[in-house]
Length: 248
Image (cartoon, rainbow, N blue to C red):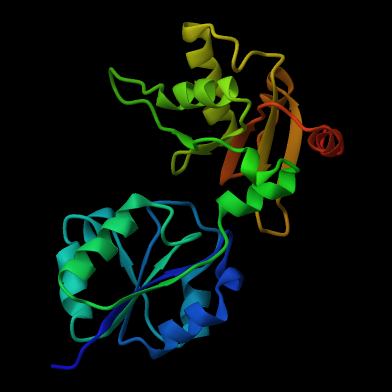
């Protein structure tokens, strides 16, 4: 039986134009191409992506990458299989698990890296090395509302580090910021008050990206388009302070 390969290829931070030549070549040569869009919002077009690589793309649901991942790995045992992922392919633990399981089955693997929010946020002027643990604001469930992202902000701030706060799939900027302030009203630790200076970044990598800096009470009035992230600054270097002034 011919030996195949499983390739995870990043689509980049915004749309199909962020796909690298290496990723495109892997897809063009592949026997089967999949894509998942449940781990991050993506601003591109599957139809345009299919036109670029010249073949059909099968969209995977969460179960296809998790509970039924064995089917992809089995297929990659004899065929060249490419799975497109928004941003960089190894940011989500789901994909690390897929690679691990493939290697256990002795299926060759390859990673094609790409741009992601983790690097694009440098446009806000804060040094990447100054960021602590990233956290995600998740949609509240009936009878339960997670506050782990608030704990991450507290830990980072205690060390003088910035916090990249991602927003759940489909969550808008105002909704995410509203959840943050609601947790603040319960915890009362002064991390995200009306006067706290924060950064809102929307559609990073696109022609209409927006990055703004201001107080929480002022940014609550802004309806930044999805996908968006919130950045809570830690201790600022004088150059970072100077850069933020240009985004008020």
